[in-house]
Length: 383
Image 1 (spheres, rainbow, N blue to C red):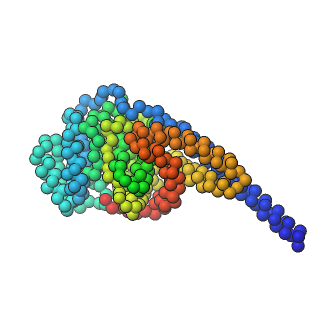
Image 2: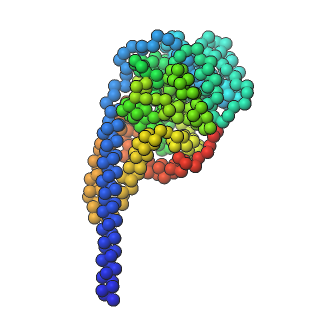
Image 3: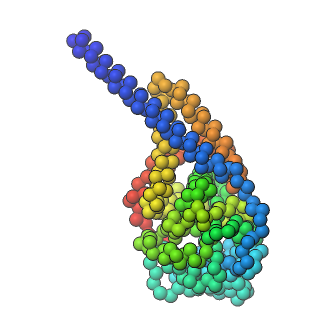
């Protein structure tokens, strides 16, 4: 009996050693991958001068397009800011997609007072989402450059259009802007702002490295010819979402895409106020990721998976013989990422998110768990 017990204990010890070694090497690999992303991709964004020094090279007008459905109060609050831009010439096209509130009458009242506003009322039935409304607005635009935003989004200054135009360079066909959320009290608001900032860090950084993969429709500018060459939204017409990120993913390139992080061009939106509303919104947004180009899926998947594995294995390492190495790796990765993120958050005007980065970074573990299924099983096709 003692011999059998000793054998069992030896087998158990050998298994523990194998598990510990496997855990250690997963931790090392995820640490190296994470460090690579922060130093190769995200550090570049931290070094960028946010304000373009060159004058706007465009010698033509801009068509601003807004699609709306039942957003009377948002239009009342935000549309005047769009109509007061310090740029000439430009037009504002608002496409009303079957609103049942007072939106249409409000828009007609605005139109009587502004000669740059054009209101389009969609009469025929439309599919879920806003792609048909947006396609109608693009078809009606009289200028070759289109600047998109939403009814619930407000430009921070009268320099929004001119600042976005200043980012245009030779052969540019698309400008990826930034659209943060309004700062309010509460932990949910802080996390929503942080998560939106984290998404922006990714798509802006990848674009700087010649790998643009998405944009945000609240602040996105591109040439009408790019839209035509892509066949509009035909490649993802079956989805309600994707008029911004899937369109950019299919047509943007290192040659035709630039970013704009000039603070004068930020377009702010009010975030969701309850976790349930945020959860539904985020599930819908994430549902388009499986349609990204394979390279983009691999890069984004590698970033999220290595992040999750690094945090998870760091936690497990605290109960293993190599806990000092786990804490060392965590400290190095946190120092690198916090410094870079802090600088980016300052450029993007949310220093609070930068200060709270260590805790917010840890909270992404729960985010990954909650939303992983959204990549495959979400079928929400509402507006």
